[in-house]
Amino acid sequence: MNDSTSSLAFSTCAYRQIREKQADAFTKYLDARSDEKAYVANLNGAWGTGKTFFVDNWCRKLGEQRYVAIKIDAWESDYLNDPLALVTAELLTKLKCQSGITDFSETESKIFNAGWKLAKNFLPVITMALGKHFLGSEFGDLLKEIGVAVKDTANDQSVSKNRLGEFGREIFSIHNKHKEFAVEFKMELSNLIKKVCELSNKNKVYIFIDELDRCRPTYAIEMLEVIKHLFDIPKLVFVMSTDTKQLECSIKAVYGEQFDSEEYLSRFFQRRLTLSEPKYLDFIKANNFFSIIEFNPVLMYPAVTKDVAYEIVALFCAFHQVSLRRTEQLCARLDAALVNLPSNTAFSFIELVGSVFSYELYPKIKLNYVLMYRSGKYNWAGCEREISYIGDPNGDNAQKALEQYTSVWNIIVNIREHAYQPSHLYNMEQAFHSNLENLIRKFDKFGKCEHLENLICLHRSNKVGVEISTENLIRKMKDDDSVKLLTGSEFEQYLHLFNDFS
Image (cartoon, rainbow, N blue to C red; front, side):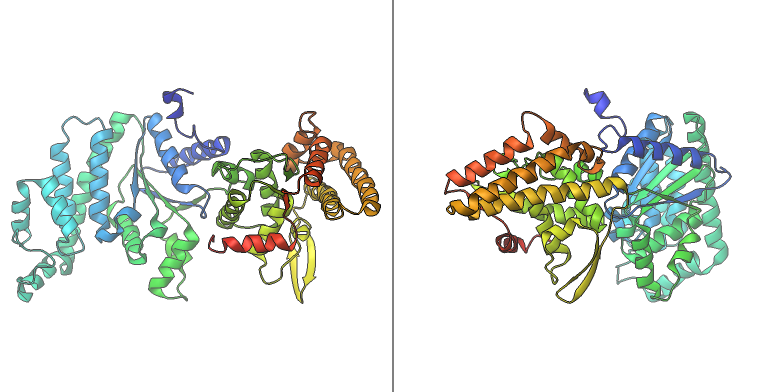
């Protein structure tokens, strides 16, 4: 893939087909909204759905389609206490680069001049700095116009209380004056946006505001208020990217638990666009878990590649319906366990995954790892727990496939433990071959299982057939005393080493 191709929007997205279609659908919908005033949409997605990645690529794709599209990271600047100055400065800076307007300086000065007067805080440091940057020599004249000397700042203790009072009455207390500033600001910005749309031959300018839910609650609220009241400009589309449930919690932190934050947000958001959660398998692949693990088919049962490992972990996640954040934590624990396994350790990958899930999800119950891929209600140590069923025929096949693999592994463990008792060994080896043949015989049925497709296909292969790889594992454990078998309670002890991974 050449550089020009890889730089295209969504070209590196693990679930490109879905995400690109969503971006196109959202754009088509937003483009069809009235352009008589600004339109504010909420792009909602839980942690792990890839909101920032999606916004970056959606913004890039709009640029490829010759829209003017701008992204602002609200969280990077929430410490500045001035969302008006931030949005104005980001908007002007990026419009200057993208709009194609040759003489931008005069327009830039007019807009910031009007916007600067509206600053809610009394000359905060950020506003002073931006004022000097955008207004240059006009900065001093503007200060005189609103009655403030250049040396005055919000933290300047030498300013008399009477002087501060006069400034407050001038800017904030006199409603008509504030209204005049707002009208001036919106008029100048509206003229600019209209000119930008004419040059781009598009009827909308898109502004993405990301990470609002991560900001301080008071700053997030101020940002919403500023956009609603001061950026209600024709042809502007705001897309506020948030984990909306978290944003609602932030608002309740300010107004109280009984406050209806959902209703409050509906004042600002005209439409909610929800970013669908990726499937577990897609999410695990996209995060490239187990990337540094060398899967050893000689000592690992069943013979597992990275793709097969992804498949098995995704299946366990689906059974337990864990969140994407929890999925990441579980994969981190598995990663740590696999990286630290001694090179001469024989183990079942299915048992490892099941043990990690049991250890992490049900630490007080200590469920046997086999129950981690079986649906139903279980009563363990006086505690009842229901494990979800995937709910489709393929899920049933997946569960039965794992059960069949485990039955073979249990025989392998018994053969190793009774290696020096020939009278027991013969019967166990017969049971092993019987179980193994039963597993192979069911491959045709299991092959229809989308959840374990790679695992089944891998073991149908002549090169890494399940029969050959399993018999090699038994032979290795019987002939090599240095091989350590990790199973049962030993797994639990081993996983205790990673209590700090959470």
